[in-house]
Image 1: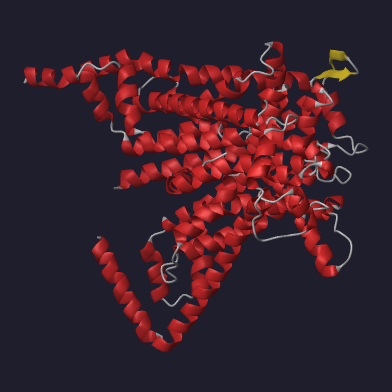
Image 2 (image 1 turned 180 degrees about the vertical axis):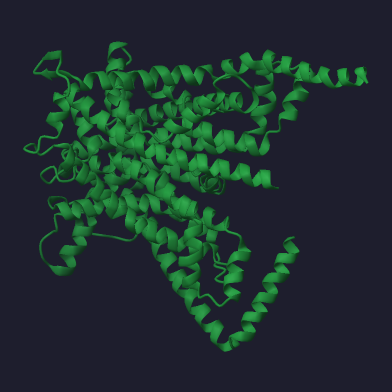
Length: 325
Length: 303
């Protein structure tokens, strides 16, 4: 008896010893990641917060500051009399995001539904997915330059307009509406394929028998879509929307190149990050750039928390399912 | 199980056919399918249209492009290519080489070290493991732009401006790659194999490099492609860090095209520059699209 108990105990002890023995390797393997994160992400972030509290900018060739000013930079960035106040910049950014995102989510839902529909049994899905995902990998700045060349005053689209109407060229970048439209259109083209694939994966995860049961009960296909498919993929929809919003807040390459860094006409298409880039790179106003970064950080951190809980919920769901089995 | 489901599907289809007259179901389904194909083809054309124009105009001379629109490629492709690579204000050959170096190093570093970190969390038990995992998950979606100011001033202070170190080394900490790797390990890296390697006397480091990494190959490949493409396309940070014209990467050079006096530029060359920036990625994509699309639907996370 005693021997048997002993025999049962020894491996446990040995295992515990093993875990202790190998523990240090866990730290060693993580070390490069953590070090690089601390040096290149955490420390710069702390410095950014630090600068946000200081008056610190380049005037001519000399630096003014750093001089502690508390929250003055935050007050200045909300100053409505300036065309570059944070509300105007956020508005520009969000409008362009919404204009691209609404068609994106509608088209992606529709395509994902078609692609996964058993009764439709569409062919060449591989081809469609490949083509539609492609713009996502294209260099955004080169794509914006391409669109600029095509829609410029002397570009092919204006050649067509002049030929067909016999009138003047339409100066796309002289109007807020058409400039925003082009930016939104590019964002749509670049992201709808990606979203379609994500939503497809979610829809394929739906148990086929649920939909069959509804069909047998006489539900129409639109009823199935609105009452079964949509509620079941809601977590993924939320995830897609929030990550897209975070991506939208970072909107930079496309409007920057399309408008030549001006955010024209009259700063109406200048995004948050375009302004940040201007403050760091050309104006060298570290105080303002810091304040703007801190605000963007807080918003993104709040949104990231939502994504985090989405993942956390997803994981605990999976765990409980496994436990149930 | 699968057979049973198929049978079920079959019977339900039969039942549906019985309740709805055959004649009614089929035509609507066909019409529905036709509408689907028309819409899908339209959007596919929309995706390809601009790149087709790019291809057409990259092969036409400045004079041809200015004189009108064409759907047929010209014969000036090689001419445009030669004049683009010999342009001295925008050294595109340097740009391609610089971007290739940075993107390759970034891809290798981010997959290797992020896989290593995922391995640490997946295999070992140590204090703070849960905290670190949750922390990385939390920072995954926070954009790097928010710390760009501190990053920029730190690089200036350390004399790292105009070098590739700030563009390559930070790739070691790639939360999205880490997350993808740990998901992959959970599904296809049994701990038993590592324990077996230990019994055979393999050191921890050797186990990771020679046994674990080969097992992760499919996931590593997908993430390497994503890291490469993200770095190849990156414009924001390089434009702040790099000043010397021969050190610039492709996106910065494309931006230069825009700020240069556009109307005076040889348009054939402009399209050729864009072509050079875009095409390598498109070729790689069409060769590996199956893996890439599988990776997208698997990971669900891409920056």
